[in-house]
Structure formats: C-alpha cells, structure tokens
Picture 1 (cartoon, rainbow, N blue to C red):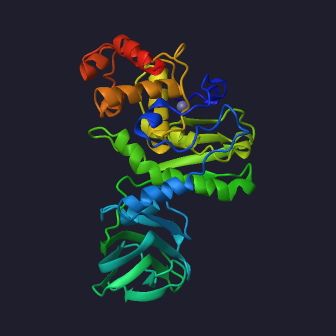
Picture 2 (tube, helix red, strand yellow; picture 1 turned 180 degrees about the horizontal axis):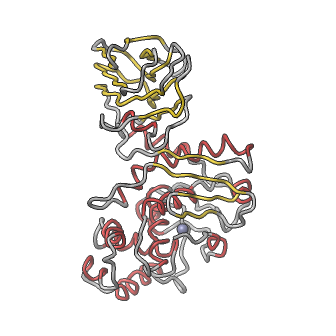
Picture 3 (cartoon, rainbow, N blue to C red; picture 1 turned 45 degrees about the vertical axis):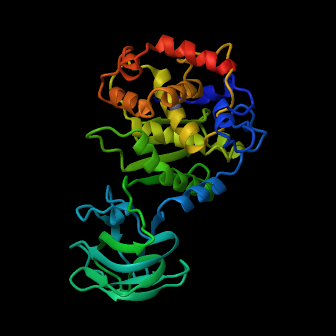
Length: 378
Ligand SMILES: [Zn+2]
C-alpha cells in the first residue's frame, strides 16, 4: 500500500459514464478526465458536499489559534468522551481560542463545557450567530461553564481573556441542540506540511478539511471489531516527488507538481486517507485488493460516477485500482452490501484467503469475475 499511485496515468479507462450511474439514474454529468487527462476539469466537489450535509445531522468543524499538543487533537473537545481532551502545546495567550463551527444555525437548549485541570487560563465561553462576531454566554467556575438558556448559535468558542501560564485543555462540549449536531465519532486531525510550496497552503487546507469531513465515512466503510482508526495523519506536499500521492502508515505524501496541474483531484487524497485507515500489517496480502478497496471508497462512496467505464475486453477482478473497485461494487450490489467491509476485516486480521470470496458470496472469485465481466458488455 505504500506504492505510489502513478499507475493511474496509464489506466485503460475511457471517458464514458459508468454502468452503475446509468442504472440508478443519479449520474452527475459525464465522467471527467482526472488523472488520465489533466486538461479536462472535474465537476467541483463543494456542491456535492453541501448537498450531502443538508440531508444529515448538522456537521461541524473545530479550529483553534493554538497548536495541538501531541495526540490531544482538537476534535477530542467534541467527541462525546470526557476522558479525551484538546490540549494546546503552549500556554494560551489573551485572545487564543478553540472554536466549534456548525454548518448552520442551531438552537442550543443546554450546554456544559468542561476544561482540564491544567487549564488555569482566565477563559470565557462565547457564542456567535454568524460565526464571526461573538458574545459571552457563560463564565467558568471550577473548570465548568453551563447554560440552560436557549441560544441560536452558529459557533461556540472558549476564549482566553488573559495570558495564562498553563496550556488550554478543553475536555468536552456537551450540547443539546435542535436540530442535533453530530459529535466527532472518529476524531481526526490532519497535520499539513506545505513547506515546499507555501503558495498551496489555502488549497491544501481545503483538501485536509474535505478529508476530515469524509473520515467518518471511510472509518465506517473500513471498520472492524476492536479496531481504532488513527486520530492523526500527516499530509506533506513535496516538490521532489514525481508520483501522484502515496501513503505509508499515517503519513501521506503528495506531489506539488501533480496537484498544481490537477487541483480538483482531491479524490486521490481520499484514496490515500483510506490507506491510512486500512492499516493491514500482514505480509503477502494482494496489492490489487488493497488498492481496489481504497478506490472503492473513493469512487463508490466519495465521488460516485467518476470512475469512468471499464473496457470489458480487458477488465479482470485483480486489475487493481478502479477496476477492482468496480468488481467490488458489483459483488456488493449483487451479493452482500457489507462485502467490502468483510474483506477489509479479514485483511486487517490476517485471515484473508482466496476462499474468502466463497465464504462471503457462495461463489469463487473466478466465477464472480466471469459474471461481472459479462455484466460489463451489456
Ligand atoms: Zn493506493
């Protein structure tokens, strides 16, 4: 899985809509060139994202003026667990803050914010209806701020009003709102390195915010019993790297050159983020399946309809990347919607074998391959 993904460039896909999107009538324009043809622009990601967000519970993001201390990431301040906390590396100075932004205005009915013992900073709890101008709604006593008055809120923040001599530690925002706001079920923080190309900073920050937004989806698709996905991922853009992107452990490397030419190819980073969640440790597992699962998450869950159409004459289940992803989608549709989740669990636990396909579907992978290839011709 640490291999580079430059093979994308040589893929045999052609720019036609996938059978899947044609079948279910949800095609979003024709497939775009992404890696095989960088001159064609992709459909922007943002409208899709906004559409998704309006349907589910209210999503939020968390930002801070303070640098995170070690593993104590920002999202731990709103993960439903008072044992985890955000902690700042340095003592908070007057004006430093940790802010929760909601995607839309919610009615807060009750709210308790707890700080950690290390926090002796003189801090206040503030609310904003527009996400920009804030006013105090509660004071902290003994590390807790509470309010049971109803507030219309777009953002909440803990802000230092004096310089402190200890770091800021925020254990939890416990909030009752209408509509409901989803806490961070799979807390994650991406650390960005754009030292090679500081001019890419704003673009790269958007990329990591998209990866963070889709992290719960990736962790759900690739979840298994007793497995805790990583909570920190480092993403670096390098100018001396000639691939597209690659992942090793919880580190992702992307090419400055490639992403400057292909700024809409954010899905490539969803693919790499999926690798960070896969974390298969067993040796000798099939690379085509590892890449196929990462591309399944990308092309069937993050940006459906963009995989392009396969060539029915040459496609094989073990063709890796989006070819295998299309095969996995077929098996999921026809046999078991949890097929990818089950294969992922077997791979993670070191129990995957060729016969796993028969256990999940009742058919061998060769039989499934023949069926799937026939379905491509139609
Ligand atoms: Zn890959």
